[in-house]
Image 1 (cartoon, helix red, strand yellow):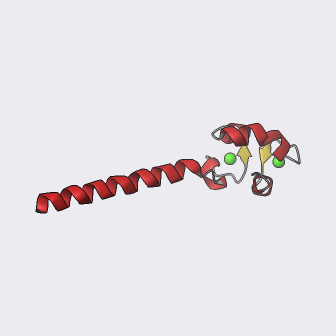
Image 2 (cartoon, rainbow, N blue to C red):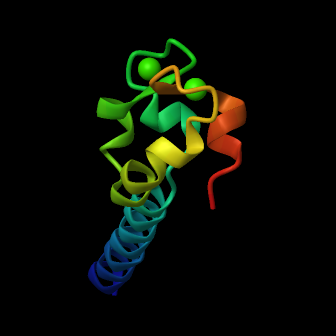
Image 3 (cartoon, helix red, strand yellow):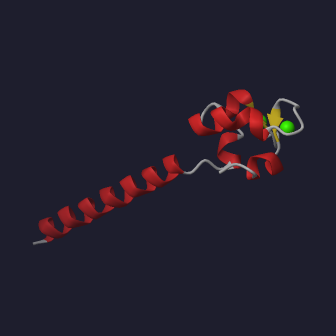
Length: 76
Ligand SMILES: [Ca+2]
Ligand SMILES: [Ca+2]
């Protein structure tokens, strides 16, 4: 009986772990993309997300080659 409970508990944990990983992959927050934490996204940092990479030039409204948090906020 206790073996069964342990098995169910393990199954429950692995389901939670999987859901957590999927949620992390789906979200592309400014903080997670800003690898060097300088408050701007370079083209290289933006390339971690295909859709952001494609939109990069149109989002960079002041044409300084990086996305500020405000410029990033216009995305989506
Ligand atoms: Ca950066
Ligand atoms: Ca910019």
